[in-house]
Image (cartoon, rainbow, N blue to C red; front, side, top):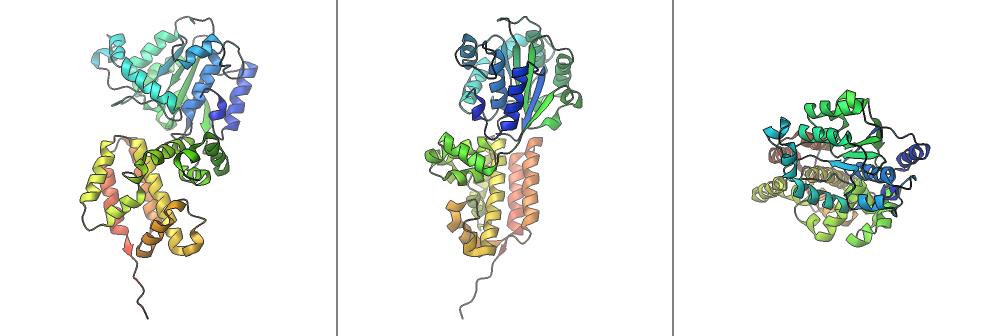
Length: 388
C-alpha cells in the first residue's frame, strides 16, 4: 500500500514527488486535492512513508525500522489528524484537550485500521463533524517537539476542508512559521473550503480522473474484475475515472449490495410505481446509511443509467456497444420502450446540483424525496404502436 504504484494514472504527480525527494527540495506544506476516491490520501501516505524512511530514497524502502513503524502507524514522528465528533467546550477552550482527544482513541484506531485496507478514501469516525480547534492546537504542540528519531516530522490532515475558520487560523500560524524538518500534508476534495491564505502557503497537487484505458488496466491488475465478475473495461467505465469508486463498486458487486438498495433502475422503478411505499422505504434506508459519499455515487450512477437508457431509445440495437451498463441492457431496453425524459438535460443538471448540495450538509431524505418527485413529474410514457 505504501508505493506510488498503487496510484492509478497519476504519473505526473508521482514524478513531481520523486524529483522533490531526489533533489531535497520538498515543500514544507503540500495540498493533495481531487475527487473523493481519487487517491489523495494514498498519495500523502506514500509520501509520508518516503519522508520518514531511513534510507532517504524516493519512496519507502520497506526494510528499515522506520518503515516498519509507519506500517504499524506507531512512528513517533508521524501524526495523523482526521475529523472527529465535537470534543466539548472544555477541549475547545484549551482545557482538558488531551482527555477529550483520548476519549476517541479507540474509534480513531478503528477508523485508521479500516482506512489501511481501503486507502483511496479518508478514514472516517462515526458522527464526525470536522477537524476541531483542539486538534490543531495539539498538532502545533507536537510539531514544536524535537524529532524522536532525528529526522523529519510529518503530519497528514485528512479531510482538511472540514476545518472551521478558527481551526484554519490556528493551522495558518504553523504554516507561516513551520519548525525545521516539519512537512504538513493536507488532503481534501473541497479545496475551496480552505482559506486563501492557507492555499497560498501550500504546494497544490491535483489528482485528476484516470483515463479509461489506464483505469481498466489498473482494475485488471488489481484483480477487481475477477473478484466481482465484471469486465475490467465496464467496471472502469462505471467508475468514471475514479479508482476508489472502482474498488467500492467491486466490493458491492461481490456482496450483492449493488443488487438491492443502490440500484438506479430499482430507484426509477419505485418512482414510477403507482404505490409510493417502496420508494419511501428505499429513501429512508439511504438516509439511514449516513453515508453521503455513497449517496453521491448513487446519483452519479443514476445519471449514467439515464444516459444509457436514452442511447438505447434513440439507437436501438446499435446502442449495445456504447452503453456503460452493458450487463443491464435488457432492463435499459424495457425502460426505454415504455418511458423517457423529454428534457433529460435538465434532469441531469438537477442530479448534478443535488450531488453538490450533499457537500453543504443538506438533509439527505428531503433531497432524495424532492428529486424523486421531480423525476416522477418529468417522466413521460411512450405510446405503444397499435398492430396493423
